[in-house]
Length: 127
Picture 1 (cartoon, helix red, strand yellow):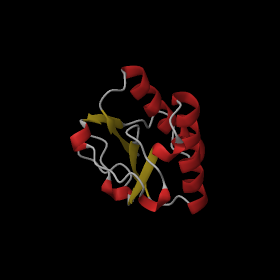
Picture 2 (picture 1 turned 90 degrees about the vertical axis):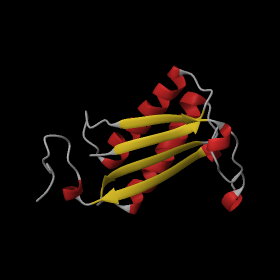
Picture 3 (picture 1 turned 135 degrees about the vertical axis):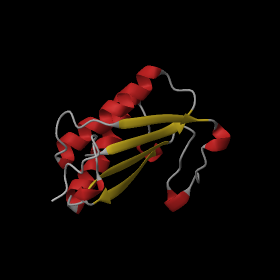
């Protein structure tokens, strides 16, 4: 059910991008109960002039290593599950890619189950 968009500035190698995707997927499975094999991601790189962010919004110092993660999934997760997801992603990216937690920006968008079609023109999760 989730679709993940991972956005970062150009310059990271294939392995870096692959690990970033793995980290997000593994965190969704462990923290929010996303089923195994429910794995859909778009990883995009942008030139510096097309990757705009505030370096100090909310007192958090960001660098050009910033990674923006947007996760679209079914509504229904608790606030605690979401907090666990954010923390798991930030900690894992820090451990595996040496990315500063300050450079991890995450946005969740929740949709009703009937708002998905995984193919065949069918709303597989519709009641």
